[in-house]
Length: 463
Image 1 (cartoon, one colour):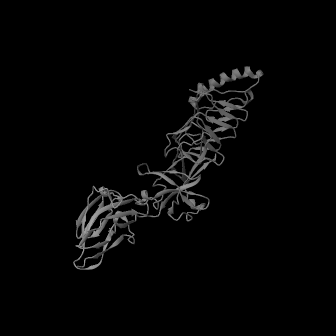
Image 2 (cartoon, helix red, strand yellow):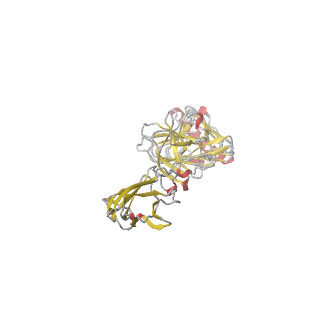
Image 3 (cartoon, rainbow, N blue to C red):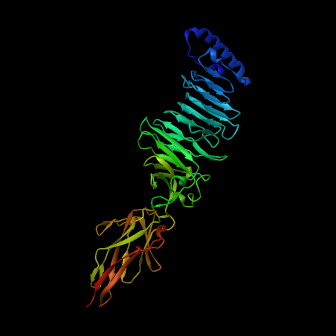
């Protein structure tokens, strides 16, 4: 296994003989000592500065380590020189039974990386940038970063097997134009949470996006009381920071709520109908465009209007509001009776769908002055296209009732056509109202100030 490790040494011609001798010594030591977990040390005086041990790996400032096989580090890695690879299948394994650090000012380029350490909850501490070209296998152990370190996933790199047991506590960077799930989370003391963020594929290959999750109150920095009027409350327990470094529009993002971190003030009984993602626009929290709320996956997908700080929020509770308009062709009757065919236009004005519990219902009081006829196959009347096929009619308890069959969609309208005859009182002249009313709880509405409309039928039946 260890003889697949290639260590390239840059050295002068006069040191070739020593290098060949050293190479076989190193291979022998690695082969004999690794499984016994004993140190393997390269003499810096006989090479260009590569120093390694089984428990620890040190690459000095003049060192150049190229991994073309499978390498194992069971303790700390300090890189002051160069770490790279030539074979895409190469793997760099961090497998320890004690906490491990990655430090140094050198360049660290890996193809594939495995993190597997169960010595404690967060055993990995990375204090430098590492660039991954292939896959990172988050097998076991949470990875924390210092301010000087950053995990960078290149164009085709992917994060595998990310879970509550293994993710990155801090910022993660993604380059290129591939879809990516950021393996990010945070902690409060010894409590760690994985809070992924999905990014759809950016439009350009030069895309560079950083993402970080913070399990803390965004209001400490971004006042959660400063928000658009339609927003009721902003999540005060968590937020994400997403930075786009190429100046292009961010692709669609998917955020995932979690009862462990997302407060109950957001996850209310009706939150699925009101939950949104908001972004801080340097002065207040604004609503982002929603593409989809997926209750089964605990997620909300948005089309961001910019980069920056994001979190969840609830819209103010808005109920549907229905109003009728009566369109009567003829309102003057001369003689004993006459046709007054009419159309009822029902419109929803708040952009809210009916609640699916209380159907929308239109009512007209029964009267001996009117004779109504409803045909659900009628498609036009008085120049209006009708939706009679969507309505059920019945006369019940002194009311002519028209009930909508489906969920009444917000910001839509329906038209009901009714054939009607007005019957004039004998030997008289006067006026009679024709009144339509939306049932009070139709579709879950509460506003009753615009539930009625009427026309006045004038008649003259004097002999």
